[in-house]
Image (cartoon, rainbow, N blue to C red):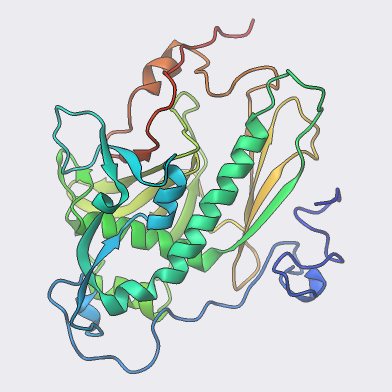
Length: 355
């Protein structure tokens, strides 16, 4: 992507969607953000009228009779996390033996027979999009942080990824809902099992499969206050519930080191609702060295988030910066389910604070 004053490709350049049209005549909006038509519903046409008792979308009465295995974390994404494409390490799952901190399992073990074939197959576009999104976000993360002051490059190349905001929002809903239905997440030491009052499975099924609008203030958020001493593992996914007591208010999805929130109410903390994009940069590099993820929404007016890492070029970001960060490095967030690759090297100690 060539340098310019714009976030992402300039309006006169070809649109990154591949249409061959100028960006300003395609997905580039008048406010400089990115825009796209609302995606079509995952299921259209007449309903079947059948509620498969083993399908968690049965409230929609739009099932078929065959029950199938569903990966609440997309199978292709799990393949991208795994070094060999076959096995991953799971930690924090509600069904795990608490005496075994980490467990190496096959990708198929993170699935359960909980969707009919009709509803399962309809999710395929979301799964494909999420796997590609993870791959590109991981590449950007690695490209930003591979500079350790041991080469003569003064910057990393700018990068740009555009994804459908409504589609990524729906995929994260699928992840959180599926993890609850699979009995994989915990709340206060017990398996999470219910959404808060006023959130029904019938309503969620209409949003996820039939394109129903999200109620006001529901949907995708990014929280602005972050504890820099908490570990962030790029080749991984972490999910955890947002809850009050035993009720699920939403859920967090950390993908390739960056965390999003799907919420069924306005979070009572500093937050950005449905950002139009996120830029990632690092201190010590030129201001025009950044990576950007753009979320294309059907309307304009969404804010952008600029994320700046305070790890300078000469330091290894994978080494904790202080004793507290080092202590947290071997721990997982309370109530979280974590999927990482099988370790290929020992954990590192922390680096002393800079004077």
